[in-house]
Length: 172
Image (cartoon, rainbow, N blue to C red; front, side, top):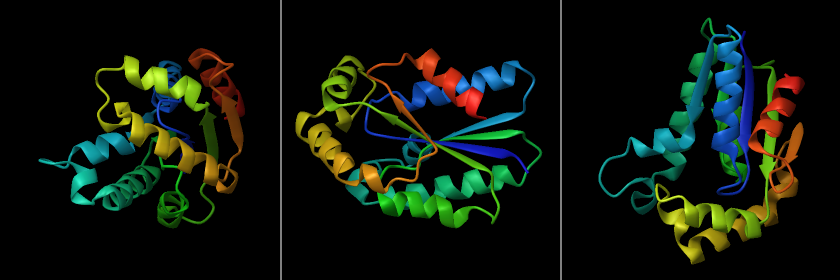
């Protein structure tokens, strides 16, 4: 069975960047790697999008199903950019996994003083560039961070994306 590495943390902490680096490096070493991003799954909803339609929980269910499906395949590593940090989002993925799944749970953490400028600098971001939304979500993250199951915690305010990817690959 393939190994699973999951990435979670606050908005704009660098999860997607590190997840993509891990996947690319493992693939460059000859590994069969799948990268499943919950945001990509959410982006498949047409029209207003998952938020206004209230479909964010459904996007997490679909993401979990994709991750679980790939874990039943002949790949070596599944890299999950997600689940989100909410306990229900964490549980959605956990419920989809077969017993005994080998999971490395990575938390990419950064304070709002780091995430807010990153979000503002990225024109591809949507609602996460809105001050109220970003700060409210970051406060919510801080209120539940101690409940998130973590095997490896990385501080994006002190480590570069390359250093974080190195740490994840060493842990794998």
